[in-house]
Each structure stands twice: as structure tokens, then as C-alpha cells.
Length: 390
Image 1 (tube, one colour):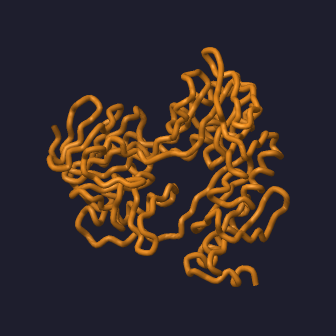
Image 2 (spheres, helix red, strand yellow):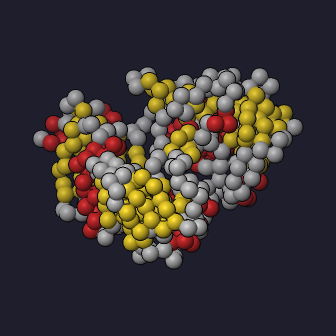
Image 3 (tube, one colour):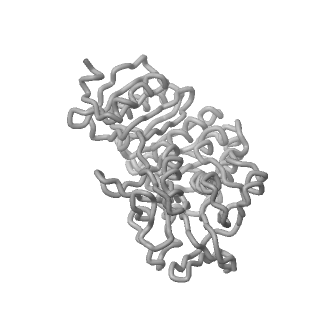
């Protein structure tokens, strides 16, 4: 049993950035990354885009040589199954244990599944690179796919499959794709984009069941409509990967509950990335699922872990989604209930400002990167919406 150093549980961006930041801060103790996957830590956003479209085969963040040079130990194919915070040990899937001086939880998210679905070939969720590659292989012979859920992952998968020549039906119970995140106005523009590419968008309908022999053959919607399909992708959201923490005493509430620098409720335990709910002085506990958030958190967490002065992770949130040739970008904290001002729309590309209580809180653009980024300072300053509309 190892008995010292920093143990980081997770195999994605948050784990890699934490380890990298520790060495950059000249931490000389042992650093160990524990992952249930066989791959080196890798980037996940391309899985629904470039990897699925066969433009990339892998998205490794750092080569093996980096971890060797930085003396970072990788424990792969052997994820964490439990933690004993009193003994400061992590038990792995094979029953072995790792001791830690500090534990960083970076396990990310687990995609939700529809438990009532039978175990049929051709039904997929998308979380890791192996699932993306499997979906890519099956799409080569697929005629018609049903994508359940029109959030960012569902929309990206629908776009990628359509680009590969698969007929796609996109099913969403809300009035429009992305409606809960970006509102119905922008959701309508996203619907227009998919329809222009030949996607059959079905909103306001859920999925009742799937059927097939050994492989899925059809999907029945909640309104009784039956859709032929030889490929089904479930993209109905994710939940924080915290099941392995049950019984540990580490507080979990929609993620690992942390203070403003990632410190969890148990001594010597921290959390970062999608799995972590950090304290915000004005908004309470906030869990952010954006790629760009991880670097900001690592720059705050690592100094705090090392007992140094740590700046709070403050930035204007940024996220994006690539769908066909349109990059949909968002700055700030747009919400579906905000007042939305669509200020540009050429039939495919668009730009919209989000207003809340008279203040600009976000901007969303499709295919307008320069104009989106110009609004960053206004959002950071809490500028009145009139500054942009006047």
C-alpha cells in the first residue's frame, strides 16, 4: 500500500490539469492518477464530434513521456471503489489500497440511462472514447438513428451522424433543443439548423419504448408514433460520478460539496471539474460542467492544497458546441428564463444577448466567434443591457 502524496481519482481533463498544476507549483511529493479506463487521460468534448466523425481516433491530453518526466504515476484499468477518510486510503476495483496525504476527486459525470430499455445491440450512451469508437463503427452500416435528448451531446451526436450520412430523428420532450439551457428562441434557431441538414426534429415528445430482436429495430414515442431505427443514442443528461463515495462521510449534494477553492467536507479531500460543487459567495453551491472551468479551478485548488494563498476561481464562464459548420458559443451564464435579444440572424448564423434584471448576463452566438468574445468585458462588469442595445 502506498502511503503518501496526492492521489487524483479520474481520467480526464480535471485529473490531468491538477497533476500538471501540482508539478508546476514545484510540489515534489508523489502524484498518482487513478482511472478505471485503459487510456491515458484524454479530452472528452471531441467524442461527440471529431472522434465520432472519424477525424480523430484519440484525444490524449499528454503523452506517456510527460507523466514519466514529471514523475506522475498512472494507475489505469483500476478505478476507485471506496474511500476511508479516517485512514486516508482509497480502495481500488481490484481490492488494493492507496494511501494519500491529499485526495482530489476528479471523476466527472456518468451518463443517465433509460433503465426500462431492454439489452439490445445498437443502443448507446456516450461518455468515453471506447463508446464513441463503437458508435462510429456501427454508424458505418446504420440507415436510421434515433437520438433521444436534444441537449448539447444529443445535438452534437445528431449533427455528426447526419454528416456521416445516417438519417437522424432527434427526439426531445421540451419545446425545442437546448430550451432549458438557452431558451426557446435560440432553441428554435438550433432546430432550424438541424432541419436544414435533413434531421427530423421531434419536440414535445418523449420515448415510451424500444423494440427489436437481438438488435434495436424501432422506437415508440410517448404519442404512439413508431420510428424504425437500427441505432439509438441516449443523451438525456448526466449525473456526478459519486456513487463510490457512499459511506465515506464526504458530503455529496449534486456533486461533491466544496468551499470556494475545492476543499470538501472531509479533511484532506478536494474535488474539481464536473463532479465538484464549489461554493460561490453570491450564488451558493454551483457545479459547472464547462471545459474551460477546469483550468480556473486547478489554479485555485492546487495552491490551497499546498497551503498557499489561493485566488478564488473567478472568470466569465465559456462553453461551446460544434454542430455542422456552426460553432455555437456562449459566454456568461445564460438561462432559459432570461430575456433574449436576437440581434443578428442571417438564416443560419446568429447572435443573441441575454438580459436579467436589466443587466447583460450572457451572449450566445452561432458562427460569430469575434462578436461573442467582444461581450466578455460587459458581462464581467455587469453592464446594463442598454450598453449593447443602444
